[in-house]
Length: 334
Image 1 (tube, rainbow, N blue to C red):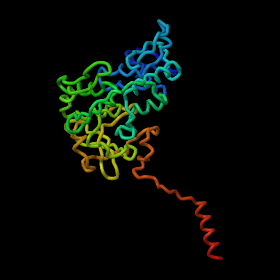
Image 2: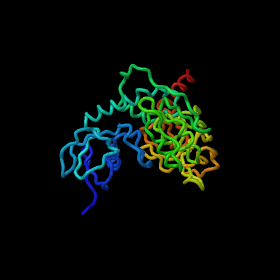
Image 3: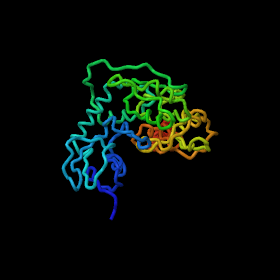
Image 4: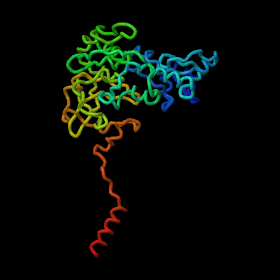
């Protein structure tokens, strides 16, 4: 007898281990039925339950208790039960609620996309495109914060922050002492000086990779280029501190930045050290593995980066060439 439990999500049934969340069960199926997640991070213990973008409708609790759940639930925090039936994109109620969540997230988030280094990789950008509304109903003054330099390599732009807590969990779980956190309550909440102390360690740069918006940015890459003009390439080196497996972002022959490799859900596969991130920006420092595969849904793929050379701007038109040749010969005869 199998110890796994069956759960049906948007009409697709999958068997998963007991204790699996609805979100991770949906990720095993894949595709469009996977709920979006702005705060949940599978590599960070305790993450999830903050942003509410992963809300789903449980239309059947289980085989033992088939009653539907009375309210929408956060799929990242809800454990599956045998016989459970879940609606995500097939539920108009879920889509309407998700639209409201996105509207809340965008209340204080500024329209910085034209100047933000996260543009093209921003999960909130994708979420607002898919579920956002054309205008805001918010009439009050938006909250603003001064930019903070967290060390010499990272800048915190708290005005863009959506309080997903990812960077807090990352710094907490990669350091020995808890010297960071969220200050204030309500609309006065902010990530501040506690994390500034915790950021002084060899893995501090990972808070940049886990940030889903442009609140934490790499000062060595700021305003240098747009990601869709670069070419991401997988590479590795023998590093005594971390795995040494990274993605290099090339512009021509220059390495503009180094990041950890991310999976299809934008989560870091393995955290990397600051030496690999900041100090090794020469091609000779790395063993090149090949182009990084990016989803064709991403704007980065428009650069045809996987060819490692741009496609010709002007394509030969054989019919036009033949017509030009014919016209040229006619002009010579006359």
